[in-house]
Image (cartoon, rainbow over all chains, first blue to last red; front, side, top):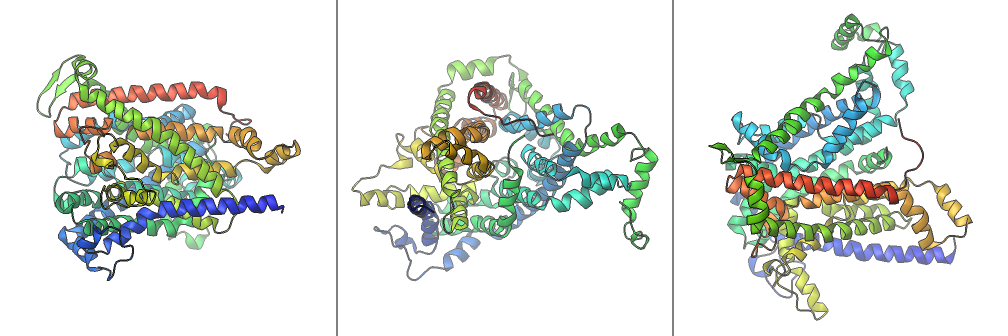
Length: 277
Length: 324
């Protein structure tokens, strides 16, 4: 390795360290604020390590509003939606990846083009549709649509991954008399684990994070999700920043934990899939 | 797949499916075309969803945009909603201008930032996995939580940003509380997410560039910038186009940060298009007007997308044949 290479790598390392420090500040700042007393929060210059740390802030944030209920609601909605999204998106992706039916390319591009459709164009009639069914203020509008293909992006990601799996495996199974379902479930699904995990992660984030959906569809507090609860918390205790930051951390934590659990597959899923074709 | 006899009892339902398909004559004994017809069955969930949740509502929304509808009374008013919006509604233009400025800055800055970060994170230095994770983390923060955190970062007196500016002797502005800096604050905040999905997509794109390309360039004597300009950039251009198109569409729909942090204020300085649309629909119950706004947004985005794809022929490099 030449010395030029070493210098370059040192520069890259320093740039990454500086960038990572800047990007981490809001996190550290949040954690630090969440552990302060209300007086310490507004102290100038800021005190980075609160002494003593106010662990009680978390308990207070958790009990001032029924956060346990909010978390349970969000978990319920997210779990139901993720299952639907992964199950139906992988079926649809299999259909697009392995069968040459008439109109396939047209339908595939039609599906892809829905990725570019702003949600607002369908938002109001879909709201009126759920209202007509008297399902406003239930979880149905937030979960049922996930069972209809799970969105263009998940389908695309899985379809690209299925295309990388050699067709010989399917054809061997076909000659043995396997049904399409059997090939899907015994051959493709087990091999597509990295892509599936990636879709699970994206789907989890999308539903855990969703704000506009619950804002439009949920009216009563016992059905609120964490994102709506947090917004309500802001309205009620906006000046108690230590509690607001503690409550925000409750919202962040599950996504970070899940990311670390799924990370290994996730990077692989995106990298192997690529975005060509 | 052939099942050993011993397993038959536990795999009963698969046999049922298999027998049913045999009875329908659409397995290996049938023609290839029969086999392929299964495709329709597999894509059926999406197709049904497309009709119920996309195509149908789109038509309904187009119809509504020519009506006055307050959830009780539906009346056809022709093009009145569009006329009012385009000629007599200053807030419509205000929200469109705000959003255009937001897009104009957050998309190019964000895209360049993501690409730069991807180039850095594609190097072989110590602890690269940790760095990738650190830069990815902000995009894992849910939008509402992120808005609350940044509301606090931008706090004029006790916020960390103005404290840091103080080190350099700069008296920081009032950020979100001043109409002149509120929109800038939202743009700055959006840059916290440059290490997210877009960066990962760039990273995947960079790793997909074959080593031979770099070797050939280095044999030709190309170094540093020239390699980036003549190898990396062209090879990455489809990825850039993808991120650009989706970036513009996503940025035009910015909502949560504006709703939570400023609710459009101060003095409508952060009234974003979708926030105004939401207010019309779910606060004032002007469903017709809101639908008209949705269609105007759709037409704008469609125009942007088509222009980009048309323009793309000049700068996007597609390598070789098509996959399948």
